[in-house]
Image (tube, rainbow, N blue to C red; front, top):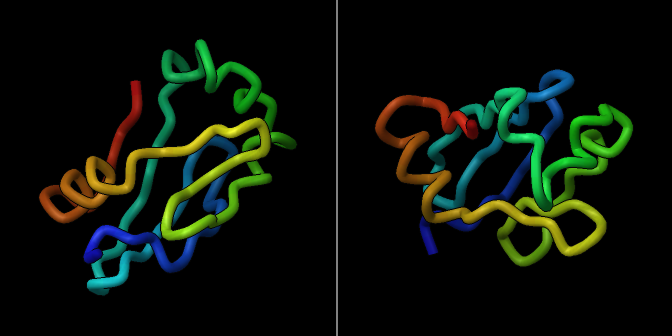
Length: 84
């Protein structure tokens, strides 16, 4: 799928850089308000830095992941996906 993530890098304490199968690339920015619910423990930079890829999806330990289709759509339109 074009929205499969092929590369992810931690670009800052609350920011990721991603590249997709179709060559689209951009940033994913977590606003402070995004660190609630399942994302709460990612507010700790040590945990945030554990971002990885599994089958084209950005994941973290504990079965946490990001929707690649929504991420792709936002990055294709604006160059970034801001989670708030």
